[in-house]
Image 1 (cartoon, rainbow, N blue to C red):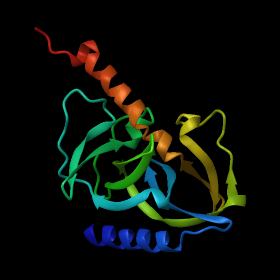
Image 2 (cartoon, rainbow, N blue to C red; image 1 turned 180 degrees about the vertical axis):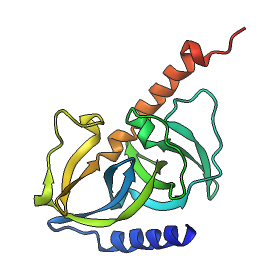
Image 3 (cartoon, rainbow, N blue to C red; image 1 turned 120 degrees about the vertical axis):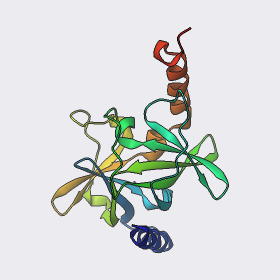
Amino acid sequence: MSDLIKSQNSAVAVAKQGAGGGDTHQYLTFTLGSEMFAVGILNVKEIIEYGNLTEIPMMPSFIRGVINLRGAVVPVVDLAARFGGKISAVQRRTCVVIVEVTQDDAKHDIGIMVDAVSEVLEIGVKDIEPAPSFGAKIRADFIAGMGKVAGKFVIILQIDRVLSVDEMALLANVAESSPEATPAS
C-alpha cells in the first residue's frame, strides 16, 4: 500500500509541474462506492495511507477525526458521508487525499477519505459538460462539471465548495447543539 501511495504522490508532483495553461486540465481521480470523482491536481498536496486518526467527540458524522501531518492538525472528511450517504467502511485501498482549499483568502489543508485513488487524468475543456441541475446523488453546487473519459463520466468536484470551512463549522455547531449530542443528566 505504501508503494502505491509513493507512486501516486510522485504522479501528483509530476502532474503539478506540468500543469499549465492550454485546453486540458489535470485531475486526480478516485472512487467512492461505484462512482468516479476527480479534483483539480493543483488542489492536491499529497496522498497518505488511512490511519492514526483521532476522533473528535460531537462532530458531524462526515468528520472522521484529525491527523497529525508533520506537526499540523488536519481534519479528515469522509466524502461519502459529506455527500449525504452513509459512513464509509475502511478497506484495504482506503486512503486520505490531502487537499488545499482557499476560504476568505486563507488556505486550509483538509484530508478527504476516499475508497481508492485511481490516476491522474488530463481532461480537455471540450470534454467537460456542465453539472446536471438534478438527478445527481450529490448537491449540484458541489459539481464543477462532468468530464467525459473513455465513454464514461467522471464527476469533477468544486472542492472549495465541498469542503467549505464555514459550512462545515456551521454543521459542526448544529451537531453539537442537537439533543442527541447533548449528554443525558
